[in-house]
Length: 241
Image (cartoon, rainbow, N blue to C red; front, side, top):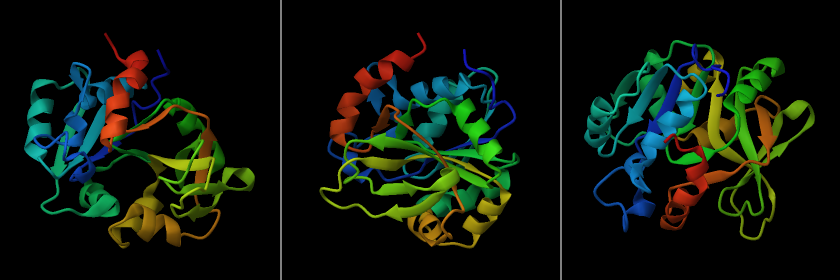
């Protein structure tokens, strides 16, 4: 059982995407409710966050929001306060955070994309963030091929110096795993930035603004049919029976 480091940290799950890449296999439900074995991915995600003591989770919903809200009403985890905030039109990652900013109370808040998983220790991530003195941190992981994701260049003192765009044949490197710790300065900055967290916020920040915790972690993005098919094998060790 991991240390309950998230008991005083608001967790925000961004789960409002249209899931266009999964339309061929997931037309009737949002990505977070995609079946992984005999359970929806969201069940796994909630189990994983509870292991680190998460007590308050805010969902940013959009596409098929009612399905997620209905699932949470029936399957609310014990001891976890759930809040759902629905965007009336697609807002992008940055826009989704701005839309629910008023619901965030903690400093920092843990923000994560609802369609990806990384087997990193979130308590170590939080400790690394606090030790860094940075307002905001990104969890990163090494992968053998960054072509699909774009890459992150990390310099001295674990500060991010550049985000590089997707490029075929780029090879191994570090990528943004889609899990963040944002302090109030970053949250306020997002409020006045464009809709894309990656392009309108990160790409325009001065080098060295963001801290990174990087490692060799198991990483999964269920946003494609191929990776969704891999999910049961990857996630099985982390499932709560």
